[in-house]
Image (cartoon, rainbow, N blue to C red):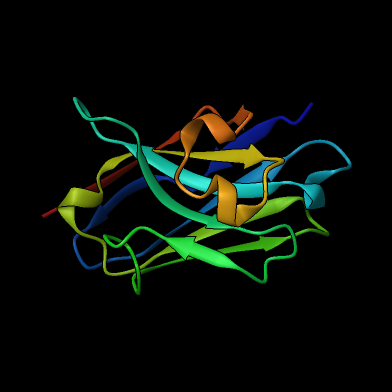
Amino acid sequence: QVQLVESGGGLVQAGGSLRLSCAASGRTFSSYVMGWFRQAPGKEPEFVATISWSGGTTYYADSVRRRFTISRDNTKNTVYLQMNSLKSEDTAVYYCAASSIPADKAMDNIPMYEYWGQGTQVTVSS
């Protein structure tokens, strides 16, 4: 069982930056692929990024590539999402999720992620 708690969301102006954190409970954090997803009001959940167990492999949605960076610290059981050059269309609730499936298989496949956090709101004002 893994419990995930996101933090770091808030209100930011377009062009600004935020860093989201997701703290995981449990001693097997390093055995999980970690992903970030987001959901805007009235829209379907959207894949943002995922990172492999070791942190050596990352995947990004086209909409965030070169602006967002996913990273993890397995000694702190934490995964991060650094978000730069934020746009109004990045406004959403951001969720972290954990998967025991390899990153290249889990990717943007929501059912592959077994555990989810409660989400943190990110609002970008234009």
